[in-house]
Amino acid sequence: MAELAQAFDGMMAKLTAAQSALETRLAETAALLAIARVIGGTLDRDEALRKICRELARLTGAGTVAAHLVDAERTRLEPVAAYHVPKHLLEVVATSPIPLAEQGFRRDRLRRGPHRLERRHPP
Image 1 (cartoon, rainbow, N blue to C red):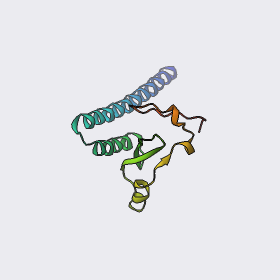
Image 2: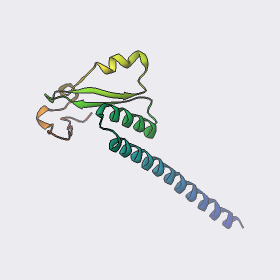
Image 3: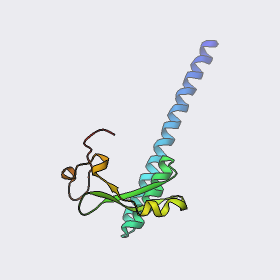
Image 4: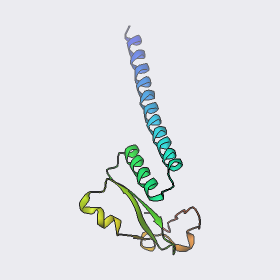
């Protein structure tokens, strides 16, 4: 009887772990679907990025999320949208670009078009 109880406990542990993994996967899929709907539903880049920030915050549990885009000179990241930035920090976030060189990014490693940032050194 003890072996049966032990086998049952093991089975329940596996089922619980599988259910948890499925719930996590479902939440990730729902967030990706919400982001896809945002992308397909608006032509306003800044509004779309704000909504994407919101979905990323929900997905990751982050309290604040901000989106930055590489400027025309490819020397810094400019803030363009954010979600749940505390009011006392909103102006700071909105007016504080991030210099790429100081973060270990090389200007010549930034591609035009969809931007991919590459670091010179690990963080």
